[in-house]
Length: 314
Length: 138
Image (cartoon, rainbow over all chains, first blue to last red):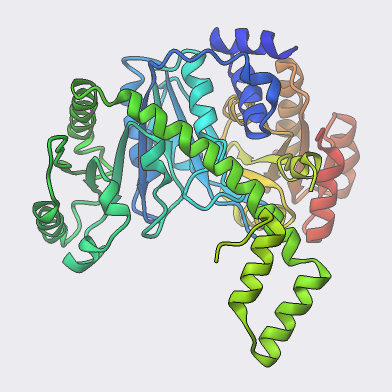
């Protein structure tokens, strides 16, 4: 089957064709680009949060319900090992148990060297899924720490999931993950501490400067095991989506997505060149020498920058 | 660095790992998942209580190269050929590897039925990864 046949079959709903095309996207195949005709119709919902907060379960619940109103795809991202390049992609197992009979397309993606909580190919995958007719794309990021916030550039609505006992008001006011939330979820809300967590988040939001585009992230309590709060979460996501539309921000979201895709892909190229340069005999010897006898680390940085880009920033 | 070199890292072998039917012994499957990960493969871990249909659906969506089945319930002579047939019926170009407790006389039966490889409890990490690479289409 050639690529244009695959695109046709994928648009008609063939699981296998969609699966193969996503592989081509991950490989960055050039031939595919000309065949992706954006509809700009898909709503992209991102879920992020620390490992173990229940992202996959909530994603499964959301997908099952949203599948009643359109075609839903889930992109589940898990980390590649920086050592072997391999990955264990284990999100499906949690989604399957809550999806029931819902017709949802799930693809697991490994980060393959990207560090922002997504795979560099993720935005391109969203473009493809939009083009072949998906109405909703739910993206689950890797379990993140505090600063992996690429999802905010990639999604229309970013949902940040926390759990009771995740931290206090000081944690809430640190920069990073919490700044990018369009909607907060306090999952496992039947556990002790849920009201303290809500209070800390409210306090943080009170201190957040507002402007004409102000959107105060609503806080939704959920219980993954019983699907409690999921309808309310969908309501909050829809409300944010309506606000984006009303403020005419969709074009801006698409631009952010394009920027992210270009930046991540170029970033990977630059990083692999840097890694190669670090392994050259000349640079490696200078690193040995600085490590052993001290020396000018910044001069070494300048030398490497010069080597990579042909100039160094004084 | 040329573009071609970058492509090699972009073509990891993708393996769907599952237990088929009623069989709760998943420790071996988890060990194999780790071996494959450390060998540079991408493992889509489906875990317990899968059906041939759910495995085929996952293989299609994930564009996997290999199905790894772990069997400890003595159902391998029924279930493994059923999986091979489901793959053939779906027209998929995917290899089926079976691991777990498989009595010696049954190994040939499974291979004759179209299973690509059978791995026993003593299989080393290197063997597991080498076999995955050798039966993969990538």
